[in-house]
Figure 1 (cartoon, rainbow, N blue to C red):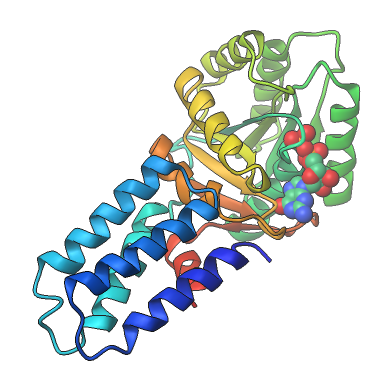
Figure 2: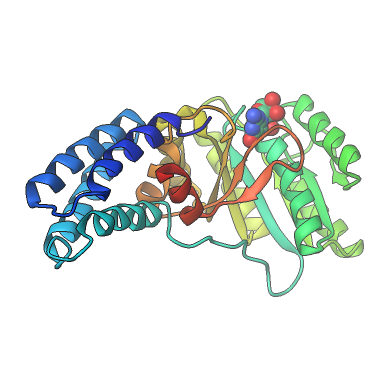
Length: 297
Ligand code: GDP
């Protein structure tokens, strides 16, 4: 299960302080030492850990928390609130264009779950938002990727626009947008090329598509299992192409939590959705508060 180790350690630590009638600064310090270890062990970015510990410590010791009637509970509440804030605070909804179609670009490295998530997102938008999506196969380097998207489209009965691999991605997207207009699709989701590593040609290609399509959302798909690598990839994509949100996949696996807890702080971009399985309905809006509650029990 995701976050198992982190949840267990944090819950154990907070349990100790929760029931205390009196809490002093030394207790808070001891608690924060354990929280710090738990976060580091969960592969949370070190700078993020440092800031988190500082913030919680200041709040716990600074106000009249320790002199209150229920200091332990209040300290626990501070940890919970700050953990929620760390993941972005509020759920960030998808941004739809004022004038249809809404264009969503899916970007990410190979294997992160980009194509699968493209299908899942289309299904979610149709089901929950009553949209009529068009999927666009713009990965011209891997025929298998186009095929994969077409298979998903068939399975979902959602149309897929593709023109094979002998044409530039920008031309594909241009024609796809024309088709969307003709067929009254109100959402266009572009599955772009993935690479094994971040490279300049890929970034330039993404920028070219971006310039043409002026997307309402650019979602970076990253694999939660890759921890700090996912955070580095997010930082990289955000600095070069600019992203509007993150989709964190494979949260159904036994990820330690580092990516989920670090990405928002490091990139200042929200996690908008999480992938929780291989099935087409396994995509959920990300709720920081619920995630914090799940971790803290
Ligand atoms: P892409 O190369 O980024 O397009 O990645 P794919 O969409 O082909 O996904 C790579 C693998 O990850 C596939 O086997 C997917 O079924 C799997 N996958 C994607 N998202 C999730 C998820 O949220 N949970 C699990 N368990 N597997 C996922």
